[in-house]
Image (cartoon, rainbow, N blue to C red; front, side, top):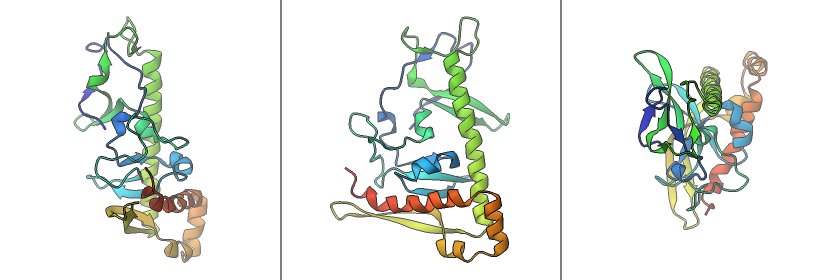
Length: 231
C-alpha cells in the first residue's frame, strides 16, 4: 500500500501538508490487511479473520480482502470501498504509519512521500512555530491507539496458542468462473479443541473475556465462500 515512506520532522516538513484522501485506490492491490481485536466485531460481518506470524515470529490478525495477487475485491475502479462494508483501521491510516526504529527502539511517524505538498488546500502538519497541528495530533492519536490495540491482539493470539486452540489451515476459494484458489499460512481456532478444553482453561478464557473474540473470529470464517462471488 505504501510506496516510499518519509519520516516526518518539524524542520524539513514545516511548510508541508497532505491533501485530503478522497478514495481508496491506494489499497486496490491489498489482498489482506492487519486488524486489531477492537475491530473484530465489525470486521467479522464482512471478511474472514485469520491469524498469522510476521517475519519476526510475532502473531497478528488479518482480514482477507481478495484471493488473487494485487486484487482487493472490495475497492472498485473508481476507488470506492464496497458499500456498508467495514474499512480496516490500517487502511484508514493512509498516508501515515508508525515505523519501528530498531536502533533507537522507538516508533517514528512516517508518511507516503508522494502525498506531501505545500498546497494551500492541504492539511498542514505543523504550525508556524513548528508545533504539531491539530490535524497531526489527531493522526498521532489514531495511530497510537491502533498500535496499542495491535499489541493487545498479539497477546490474545499468543494466549490462543497457549490454550492449544490454533491450527494451520488453507483457505480455498472458488470464484464464479469455477476457478479454484488456495491461500496458506493462516491459522484458525479449532472448534473441536475449543469444545473439549479442560474446565481450568474454559474458566481462564471466561476470565480473560476471550469467548466473544473467538466467536467473532469463527463467525467470520463463513465469509471465505463469499469472496468467490464478489464482483
